[in-house]
Length: 131
Image (cartoon, rainbow, N blue to C red; front, side, top):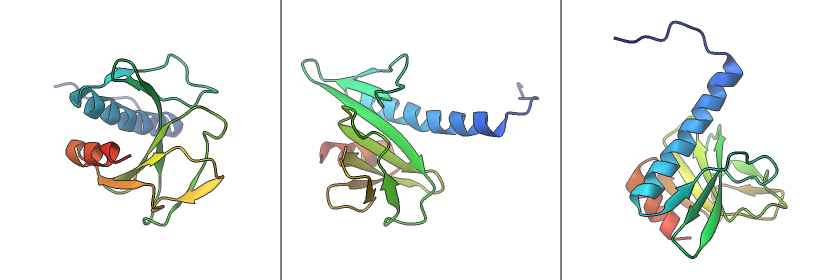
């Protein structure tokens, strides 16, 4: 049976964890019938995933946070970009939020425009469709 025998650097390991959340969203959206595209480079555009239903395209930014509760304040790292939706995962728990991209510098996760979900496909898609 294969076993990883090398140590992964801490920064690299965190990047791998963050990418795993992006992969979850890609999988869930594909299962929902969306065409999903991954930019070769998202530096400057803040787009982790581009989705389409055919005629329409939407930019999605995925963020992970260490959140102790729903009132955690999210910092806007996509300001000035064309991002449409932000998906926020609590790394240290089993929930997240789907939010329309906002212009403020900060906003609490439990803002009325945000939709909370438990980290499962059905819960995520239910929250995503409410936007």
